[in-house]
Structure formats: C-alpha cells, structure tokens
Length: 451
Image 1 (cartoon, helix red, strand yellow):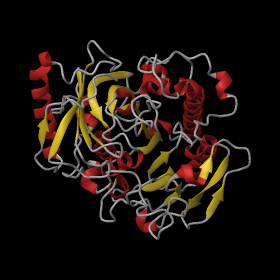
Image 2 (tube, rainbow, N blue to C red; image 1 turned 135 degrees about the horizontal axis):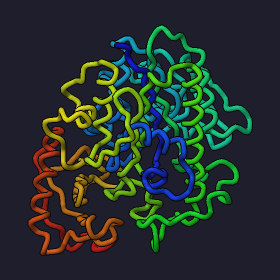
Image 3 (tube, rainbow, N blue to C red; image 1 turned 30 degrees about the vertical axis):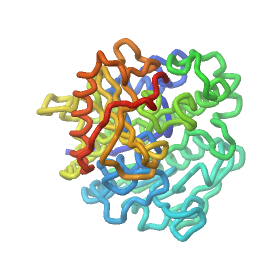
Image 4 (cartoon, rainbow, N blue to C red; image 1 turned 60 degrees about the vertical axis):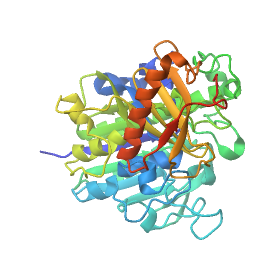
C-alpha cells in the first residue's frame, strides 16, 4: 500500500471561531471550510499547553511539556527526544521543516545557547534532516513585510521586498514541493507565525488593508463588553487568518497539479488560541476556551466524508495519529491515541476531558470536559516551574449555562461534589504524566469571583 505524503499546516495563536466551519460569519476561510467538508472536522479540539514552545514540544514528541523539560518558551527540546521526524524518517519519509521552530534556544538572550536570531544548528532541529528553512523564533527575525529565515546550511534567506510573510513561507513551501525528488513520500511541517501578534510592533499584522477589509466583524461572545485590546487588534488578526487560508488554497492547487493531492494527508491546526488580554496581561496562558480551543481539520487517506467529530481531542492525539498514518510504530511514551481508532470505533476507551498544563503566567493545571472547565493554580510558585505538590482551585465554569465563561463558580457551595469529582480526574491526569501526587485545596478568599 502506498504511504501518504503528510503535510502539517500549523498556525500560531489561532482561535477556533475564526473559521467558517466553526461558525465564523465572514468569508475568511473558504479553502479550510472546503477541506472540512471533504475531510474530518473536530468540533472540540484543545491544546495541551496554551504557550507556543511547550505546545510545539508536545506536538513533536507526543508527550506533555513537563515530561520533555519544555514547560515554558525558550526551552531546548532535549537532544535525545524522539520526534515525528525520527519516526517517519525510519519509514523512508523525506522530512522537511519550514517556518517557526521555537525549540532550540535556552539560557539568556545573546548567550551561547540562544538561537532566537541565529541559525538553528543541526543537532537542535528535532530530527528534520532532509530540508530545513526556518527560524527558531520567527517573530524575532521577521515582520509582516520583511525578514529572513535560515536554510539547512545555516545561510540567511531574505524575504523578497514587499512580500507578505505568509506568502513568503508559502512560496518557499511550494518551491520545495515542486523541486524535491519524488522517490520518497514527504513529511512537511509548515509552521506559520500568523495570526500571532508581532511582539516588537505590539499589533497583529495582517496584510495591508486588513483593518478596513475586516472591520465589519461579529464580536465573539467571550470578548463582548470586556477590556483587552481586541477592538484595536481584531481586524488585523482576521486578516492574518484569511491570508493563511489563501496559502492553504495555493498549496492544494500545487499538490493537485503535481498529482499528489489525493495521496496527501493534510493536518490543519494551531498551537493555542487568543483572548486579547481579557483574561490576563498577555494573549493566552489561561484555562479559558479563548486560549485552549483550537481549529483542527484532517483531510486525506483515511480522513474523508465530511465527518464532524464531537468527542474531545487534544493536540497530543496528533503525533500518534500522524505516525500511524505514515506506517510508523507509535511509542508507548506518547500520551495521546491515534484518532483513526476514534473514527473507526476501535478505541476501547477515549478520554472524556482534555488535560492542560499552564505556565509562564502561573504554575497551573486544568481539565476541559464537555460541560466543565476546571483550573487550579500553585500558590507561591512561579510560572517557570515544572509542577507543585499543592494547588488551589482557581476557576470553575459550567459551559452548559455559561459558554463564554463569564461566571466563575469555583466558590459555589452547590457545586462542591462537582469540584470533588473534577479534582479527582485532574489529579489522575497529573499522575499519569509523571507529576508528583498533589493536594488540591478549595478556593480561598483570594480566588477570582468573576472573569
């Protein structure tokens, strides 16, 4: 049986509700909507860590960020960790990476282990050996209309003048697809930075004209009547999303022209969402759906029929899914399950919740069930630690009556039994991924009583 090509189309900081097939009214994503109509869409998909680097560590290894010593940004993926690239290369795949990596640097800015603005050396590329065109932290080496990345030999490759960043990465991905030898199937991990904000410009940089083009938007329910900076930023953010969708369309056209489309598995997802500073001082790093709920669409061999899956799936389910699609063995160390088993009914069990580790803003843990969001925080701990033996309840939302998570009921006495059950389930997850057995204390007077 011919093995499929595999293309992971990875956006950064993209809310699920920016996509038409998830309810977005504006015509932002016609190509992704078509992909969902022909493939499989996952209605309730969640990240396992709402921070860029840790989410990427989990997606490459299939293990939770604390298990691979990448609990925060700017942590190097340990050299001995096996990744998707290792597993698929052993099955004869050509492995290629284009875009943002965010798993090479550690230590202080400018130090010997800092590659945020330097070429990532081969031993820090997670096993992607055949083709490499990337920056460790793309927002540090580029802006919307200027910048550079580094090729396999560590040479700078400049963006063409006046070319939008999404288009440049897509140009180079298409160039790779056209010029590669076709004696092996390819595994291309295409990692965009959009719609992530441009750090040093303090804004979301959509293509020119985005603010005017996408000014007539519906305010998401979790943002309405809140503070934050969404009123200023949301049109540019939507412009980024639309540019990504056009990139997806161009890639599809290229693969069709090359005769590779029908035998290519396309996985579209993101590392986390964005709450526009309405939940904390940053854009993610919280237990709320705006931070943790992500788009996820898979199309290709084994993933067709326009199906919609309502069961909860996690970012950690994608690594075993991708390996199984490529005929590679799934290591027992991976924490997720191949989604194929959920589709064909072979899964003996499937989790009823997504487990989330939260860092940088706090040392936090959470679970998201079909009805509840439950989150705890380690008192006295910084957001840079691997875990804690004591946590305190922080948030409890009943999504059946409060889908936008406006009413924190963590101190509601009528829900004490619910909290007890959720705490038990959360502790079970923490132990499963190797964390110490922890005490979860009831929320104290310092608990937040509203959003």
